[in-house]
Length: 551
Image (cartoon, rainbow, N blue to C red; front, side, top):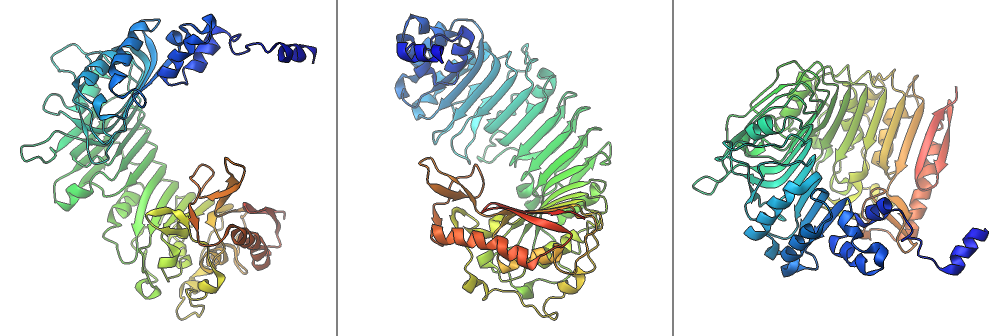
C-alpha cells in the first residue's frame, strides 16, 4: 500500500519504465505514423518505434504523402530485417506502379509476416513478387472490389528463386499472369515448406476477348497440411499430391464451368486427408487416389428443397464417396413461398443411408415468415438416415431474419400471427408424425438446438426429438440456446444480436421490453410441454435452457 501511494503521489511515468522489449511490443500495435510520433514524448521513447516487431502502414491519413513516408520509415528502421510488415491501401493514389515497386522491395526485408490489403474501390497496379523472400507468412488482397482482381506476376522461372521459409500463403482478389509462370509450378518448386494455402477469388490471365483464361492448379507439396480454394471459378483442374494434407476446402468453384459443360477435374492424392469442406457443384471428374477411407469429417454440404434433387446431386455424390465419415455438417435450403403441398414424404429419399455418422450438425437456410410448411418433417427425414448418432446440433437462427439478404432486422414471432401458419395437426396432412415413432436413435447422447425462439414450428422439432412418448434411452443432455443473443452495448445499454460477436440488430419487429417478455416465456413453455421426468431442467434467464439426466 505504501509503494502504491508513493507512485500515485509522485505521478511517475510508469509506461516509460517498461523494459525495451515490452515498450517496443506495445508500439507494434499502433499505426506506424502514431508509433513514429511517440518519439516526441521523451528521450526514453526516441526511436523506440524503430525496433518495434511490426510496422503497420496505412495511407488513411497520409494520402499523397504515403509513399514518401513509407520509404523514409523503412530507411530509418533500426535493423535490416523487419519482423512483420502490414500495409493497408485505401487511396487510389497509392495503387500505382511506384507503390508496387516499393512494396516489392519492402517484401524482401520482412522475415516473419507480410500482409498487403487494398480497401479502396480499385485494384493494385501489377505487383511483381521479388525473386526471394524470407517471410514465413504472406497475405495479399490486391483489390477493394469483390468482382475485380489485381494482377500478380510471379518470378520468372529462369531466374534463381527462393521462398523456402514460406509456410503460410493467402491470395485474395488476385489475377495471375499464367503466361509467365503457372501458380502450381511456382509453389511446388519454390515453396517446399508451405503448410497452409488459401486462394480466394483468384483468376488466371485475360484472353483476347476480355474473358478469363482457364487454368489448372497442380500442386506437389509434401509439407502442405491445409488447402482452401474459395470462389476460384476459372480453373478447370485441381490436382494435389501431398503426404501431409489433412484439411481440404473447396467452395463455389465449379458452378459456372459445369453450366457451360466444360470438362473439370479434381484429383487428390493425400493418404492423411481427414477433413473435407465442400460447397457448391462437384467437378465432372473427381477422385481420391488413396481412397476416401481416411476422410472422417465432411462439412459445407447443401441440400435444396423442395424437389430439387438435381441441385443436390453433388452433395449426394460426395456423401456416397466418403461413406465412412463420422462427422457431417449440412445446410438444408428451403426456398421462400414453400407450402406443405410442395413437399412430399420422400423429399430427401435421394440422400443415402449414413450409418457411420456419429456427429450431425444441421443448419436450416430459410425465412420462417416466407414459408408455410412445417420444418420438423424435413429435419426428421434427414436424421432418419443417421440412425447411429451420438450428438446432434440443429441451428435455427436464420429462420428469424427479415430476409435472406437482411441480417440486421430481427423478426420476433407474434403468437397471434403464428396461428395463421401453424402446420396442420391431423395425421392426414402430417404423415411424418407416424414416422416419428420409427426414428431409432438409441445411441443419441446429446441434443443441441441454437437460434431457438419458441415458435410453433420450432416446438414441433422438439416434439419429434424428445417429446412425450419418444424414447431416447442414451440421452444425457439437451441444450437449447435462445435467440437473439443479449449483451451489454458500449454505452452500457442492452443490445441484441445473432451471436456474441455479431453486429447488433438495427431493427426489431417488437419493442425491446416485449422481446424480453417473450424470451422469459420460452423457458416456462418448454418445461410445461417437456417434463422429462428422468432428469431436470436448468435455466440461464434469456440465454439458455439445459436438461440433464439424473437416472
